[in-house]
Amino acid sequence: MYRTHNCGALRMEHVGQEVSLSGWVQVGRDFGGLTFVDLRDRYGITQLVFDQDDDAALAERARKLGREFVIKVAGTVRERTNKNPNRATGDIEIEVKELTILNASKVPPFTIEEETDGGDDLRMQYRYLDLRRPPLQRNIIFRSKLAIETRKYLAEQNFVEVETPFLIKSTPEGARDFVVPSRMNEGQFYALPQSPQTFKQILMVAGYDRYFQIVKCFRDEDLRADRQPEFTQIDCEMAFVTQEEVLATFEGLTKHLFKTTLGIDLPDFPHMQYDDAMRLYGSDKPDLRFDMPIYELNDLAQNKGFKVFDSVELVAGICAEGQANLTRKQVDQLTDWVKRPQIGAKGLVYVKYNEDGSFKSSVDKFFDTEALQSWADHMGAKPGDLLLILAGGDEKTRKQLGELRLEMGRRMDLMKPGDFKPLWVVDFPLLEWDEESERFHAMHHPFTSPKASEVDRMLNGDHETMKSLKADAYDLVINGAEIGGGSIRIHDRALQEKNFKLLGFTEEEAEAQFGFLMGAFEYGAPPHGGIAFGFDRLCAVLNGQSSIRDFIAFPKNNQGRDMMIDAPAPVAKEQLEELNLEVTWEEEKEA
Ligand code: ASP
Image (cartoon, rainbow, N blue to C red; front, side, top):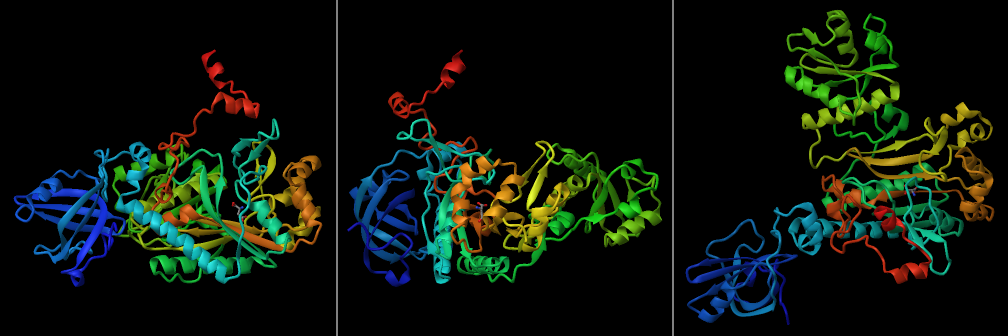
């Protein structure tokens, strides 16, 4: 028997018992005749003691143990004289009588501790060592719990877990596909699913009523810390539902997950119109841990002789509470910050509403105290506050102010850990006009239904009308992160055809790609809708972290590489021949 207990189990009540433990050597320490070894497994750390006076040979072997050796010990639990209150097993230690080395270990390339000294790439290369570290073990175990609780909740609500295929045809979630060549169908390729979207709709046509799956999705996008080429969704679909019923179900799931993993009771989630989110926060995923909304100043600031303001579509600002005392240098820094290419503002106007009621601004030459007072009043400012104002095109300026708002939130420390502010953003536009390509894109995806009240306008309206169509589409946002998105779907062939046409598909293209779905709509498709949660991001947000990578056991790096198995990699010539593929890249590179 390798162990009677794990390394996190023993307490005062076990004192006197003969036990055996197995695990990894965290660290060894020699004190004269005593050798202490911390033995670790995923449950905790237990202190072992080897006494020179009791068994000199055994103590000598203990002194030779290296970090990460795998050992088995047997001995007696005893009370520690020098207790460690920071450790669950800190009241006891094991007086070891037997030691077996199950496996030696090379010296690991970085420390296996709470904080490590290893760089990103090294830790990814030795992922098995990084995964031994307590913070990653907590994350991966948290993730497991989240998945189990998701299944429990949805099963309780009559959802059926159905697996959908990975070798499929292109799915239109708006990213690039990963493709897989087919040996049996020469010259043809599968695409890995960007999501199970069409399959879950087909399951509704097939009468399964409520579907879910915790499923891998594959999108070949440029990567950032919060993106991975393969990621996991809690994917769901429901038949015979309105938008409100979908939202209620998944608000219920979210509350259940917060309660069972963090012990937090979330209040009901507010609903915010997409238009309001953009207008007030310059973002379709507002962080509501603090307010600081955008105020329009056109009426108060235009046509007063300041050309920069007069020539633009929008003058607007935010009010940073208590920030009037920023130094000149700090304001200059903010100006540089908004001028960075990522934000792209031309400049920043500030108005300090000083504690003594006076004003100091960068536009004093153009606006008198009365004017500045009227801005402050309009923006709800009090003495001591700082107004930050941008001017330009409407949409662009609001987005810039949205970014500036978040930056001020960070600088003012307004995003408190442990504070969770979920909301539903609803009534997204159906279509998005892309100036560059001069065509419509689906704001969500091509299967999203316009609001019932919009169908007429969609079928009969002109080009401008199409820009203003609203969809039954919604996102769940928590603390400024998009956790999930979904929609009520089109379930009628004619409307689906019309949507494809608006999106620039020819009839033939639509038929070739999605004929199976439109065909299914002709055999009794029920009204249906659904949602998908980004599971990795949900894990990260629940833990107040921004990178999803630490919640994925085997993630890819920023180049999409798995550093441990070293993938992607070339394949053997025979494999290519079997697939009838030729790789010309090497030759081109050499040429
Ligand atoms: N398939 C969608 C997505 O991956 C979610 C949905 O509409 O249910 O974003």
